[in-house]
Image: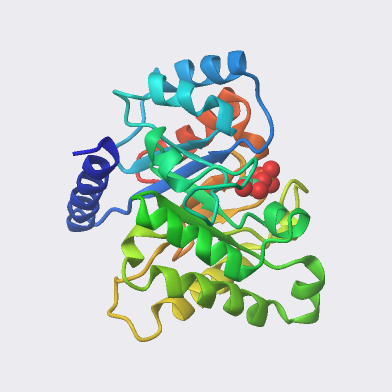
Amino acid sequence: MERREIEQLVRAHMGQKLEAEGKRAYIVAANWKMNMSAKETRAFLRELCDTKVPEYLDIIIFPPFPYLPDAQKMLRYETVTYGAQDVAEQDKGAYTGEVSAAMLADCGCSYVLAGHSERRAYYGETSDIVARKASKALEYGVVPVICIGETLEERRSGAYKEVLKGQIEAAAKVCKEKPAQCIIAYEPVWAIGTGVIPTIKEIEETHRYIHDVLAAGRDAGDCSRILYGGSVNANNVKEIASVPHVDGFLIGGAGLKVESFKNIIKQLSLDGCL
Ligand code: 13P
């Protein structure tokens, strides 16, 4: 059995155990984007591995492709997991520069980001492309973290619910057989790297909306987990964590320095916080 399959079984079991104890499992993920060097990657992972992480936190690191073998080596016997930032929509062939889901599985990736807003905005990824990427990941046993989010104009004009609905429905088509094995990351574009975050009320309302669209026509509980991303740091993470339907975080800037990432973990580890 592959490490990723064992992880999935352990997580399913842990999820049930935590639920029975009235606790929630949280994901704390760092998307490094196009940052870090090999040396910085190793130093970060070394220190992270020495950090005490409570059993209800799933820590995931998304390094750039060239550092996946470092993660594979260093995290082999650790509870910290890792994934890639993108995946090809094709299986294999003449697609220069692309990386396939099979290759990610070979590198031991448990997760892959699909449709981060930077990919949608700079590389023309539509919701259909994102859905095909996510579906390819699932085929190879890699959990897709499907990113969605509206721009500031869409938020201001009130069109954001329609925009999110389109993105969610494209994702839901892929996840319909395996909702528990798909993760949605809600990242309002206007909150990414800006230091501006939605109000708690806005996060609550939007996460509830995403949950309701995902859950339409399903049994209760049969829903993908929903992460929040956008200017998360050690000062605001605890308050956001208490919002219903926030199942974890996708962190950019504050996940580049091991100290600030550890501080976020620490905030979520305080007794009675979750
Ligand atoms: P920041 O945390 O830097 O706002 O980035 C969020 C993000 O894009 C994570 O994918």
